[in-house]
Amino acid sequence: MRRPLAVRAAALALLFSLPIALTACDGDDPIDPLTQLTFDGITYNVLGGATLTQGSGSFTVGGIGASGNDGVRVTVPDGAIDALDVSVEPVALDAGDRWGMQAYGATPTGGTPTALASAWSDGLGGGRHQINIAFASGLGITHVMFRYFLGDALVLESPPVDFIPGDGLTGQQMLVQTAGQGGGDPRSVHTTRSGGTVEVGTDYRDQARPAGSSGDCTGILITTPFFAEPICADYVVATPLNLGGVPLTFPTIANAEIKGRGIDAFTVTANDGQ
Image (cartoon, rainbow, N blue to C red):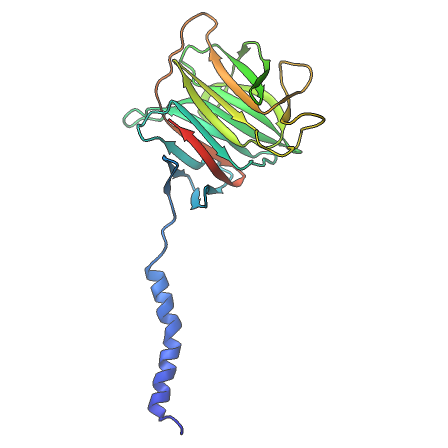
């Protein structure tokens, strides 16, 4: 039996109206991008054009473009950072790429945040990168000392090294120096307050034979400005000094920023902050 014409017309009208109704529903209820999350008790807020994607036991910071302004701001519950270590999946750096962390003091009302200390890596191409650090001027710092570790063993301690005025991780004028050039991919950045001094560093531990390793080296080979031969290390720490014997006193670290340039994304796998 054929259906009446009016019934068939009503059915066709319903069929063709479904996609329109669904489209309208989708447009009326957009999904807001994630701009903040708390991971192991530490809060991350997006910076620049960055995005956040929650994973299982990790999260990914995407949208890292070429400006150098994309990343996340890190804060801890009591508002003052004594130590912060953020571990990521190894960050592969091509020539011109950048990834690292900058610690800030409290921001004056209506003022610009004060950059206190930075540690970052700049890609050089060919699987190599340059390890850089910077400290704020005006704190009485005259020199920096680098220590290179393999596991828990000290491999090399540099003599006190003069600074070169330059731009820090985010372009602010700071006291800059390099710890050398290495292969492999950075997988952690950290800042630690020790007395009145703040140290910064980066590490390459837990990588399976990273690029740049050779022979019995279980870390990466780093060419330093202070030693004739490359050294095998997996952890670099920079300590500011005052050779005139004046005690250094850093302001409280209020927050830190982890930023990249040209790397598209990085994935945070662990953090430890207090």
